[in-house]
Length: 357
Image 1 (tube, helix red, strand yellow):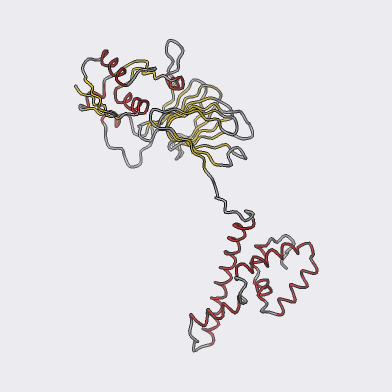
Image 2 (spheres, helix red, strand yellow):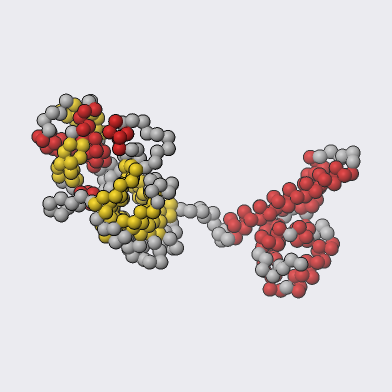
């Protein structure tokens, strides 16, 4: 025997005898459910809600059984054999029941569980920066995020209700508010990071050949999106780098393979003489270039100054520099770099920068 004591409105609607009771087409079903309702006054409200949903689904029109019969007669001519007629009738009846149930669930979730409001399933808040722009964001949990140029940070409306999860494209420095009951998670296209309360930098630009995370304070664990590299635990001063192509492919500019296995390295962050950390210098509105080639510097300068840099000779990309950039213009930066490596020229046309020999 079916225990209906814990039924909700949707459960009643699945019951074919209840459908016939609502439709008023079967005396036995009507009698049974009238007795059931009298015997279970605690379920009167739930049954009334189920009947209301049935009325909405049927459009307050003719009984459903009559509509199914008319539909059957219209779609299927009278068969010659009674057995075939019975099978078709059962098929239509089952199809009608399935439509009714799915319709009930849809309307119930839409109009009743959501109090009649058309609410989106999940609302996403997005913070974005353009090239040459940086933005500070305070999340609902008190976490501070500094978003670097040409980056996007997304979180759902229910952030901090049960979970604290964000998605990052680009670069950001996180100072996470500690909450042992709600671990903080950062999702990128290459890896995911789990933290409790800590400070770290994440750099994951889609147009760069590597992504990295640098831990300043606390403890984080991270894992490649596809499980590549297993789970990595970082300690303060450590930096992990995910290479999207192998190092030899980077140097030779070979075509990226269809399904590369990222190379992962773990090193210490780079600290220079005044205790500045190279990887997070941008949070102090400065760029620290430390023995980097022109191709690497190109990506940084393009985002920082909102320009596009083009080399006329591939050999120029291998030039290496060490420099500190603060409030200089792009022209002043190029002039300073040229002073250390005289074997190149530059031309600025609006937002276009051409580097040549």
